[in-house]
Length: 559
View 1 (cartoon, one colour):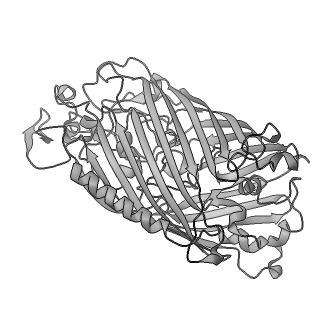
View 2 (view 1 turned 180 degrees about the horizontal axis):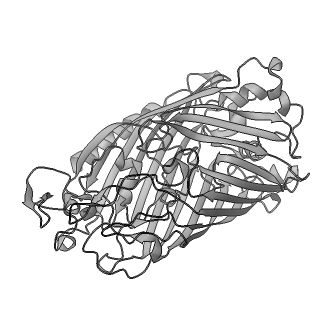
View 3 (view 1 turned 90 degrees about the vertical axis):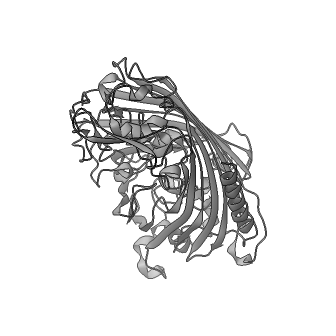
């Protein structure tokens, strides 16, 4: 373990030093930069993360105007003769990363093989716990995508983004829809009435499409956690390289909404800007009301643009085998019905909250269950069952103009017992539903350094530290300990904007993530493959902790 850790530290240090001495910072997504003849740094603090001005532009429906109706500069999109480019862009990313997993036996050697009462051959390791070893390989959140968007008249905008690996994380580079929406602005002569139709993002402080830690999936546990499924395997940091021999889940929760993904939805969005001066204080702290915003999403449980984590619901669950050798929860697509509602209200002061001023918000997700097919060990989820999530978030800037940004969120989740199905034997009687609390803190520091390419612009280098913690407050079965699937993780990023122009952008990055996942060793080992074997959950180490050190270095490119 010590040798592995030293190897990782050396690799990360080399990558960080290389990034540190690389050229000056740059601009961002070239399409809008070409349109307005602005540097990408006008909207981005660190590509692809938006500054306050970028959030203003995005929230207005790709308008510089604050009235809800596009002005003459905004309308250049509908006059191709005034532009020297075709309004379409290409984006790709590639990272090389690895995981050092510890606490679970991932070896297929030195195992015990026997025949269970159903006549099936079952192989389990001699020990559940152990050094899982080192895994590495290439990965990306979205391998490639094509982007186009803008205004088609002064109150209708659109965005289309097909791509490969659209589900994010460790998903294969299959073709999918990352985003696809049309937005109608100022429907009743007021900025309080705007509507998105299609596959759009939820209103969060953080965005899965703008996460800088490429190669780690979502670096926020709050946004990708699935109760019953070990986070160390669910999170792409480990899943991208580690191949666990067990099926992974002790139980399945029918709350399938991946919180930070894009959803097939009807999204109402309203806003009011106090005054232009109140949004441009460029101060660390302000009480001047800048923007009041309200967001309500109507989300069908069955995604229109292909099910999967990228569309808010899982399209299949891991195939698990019961004692009789039959499948209790299979990998076929779920026939989802019902719907969910997500809402968020926020107020910012002195700016949007990303580079200046503060923002405070409150959010909630309430929805109907995704039905789980009946199985030998599964009770099936009641599609009329209702789950809920509630939370608050905040963003502040102790050093204004992007010098130091701190944001965080806290959430509590309640899933009733009718949402839970167990494919794994020996867990005991059901005692209730699932309840947990999760929170994160994200600190970003952005100093500037000189480089080789003076024409590249802003000279920005960004260091980011993210802390996640998740505590289970209630488990659904009597034999599951209270800390099963608790999570504690740290993530560290160094990202340098290598090159930028009105045609292309390139960023280099190095990331590291450390995660401790409590009580999941047995569900990730081959003991779980002997589902229903007497006393398997009582084996020494079955509820042992698993940890992983994950790193990635890579490149992000847009043209």
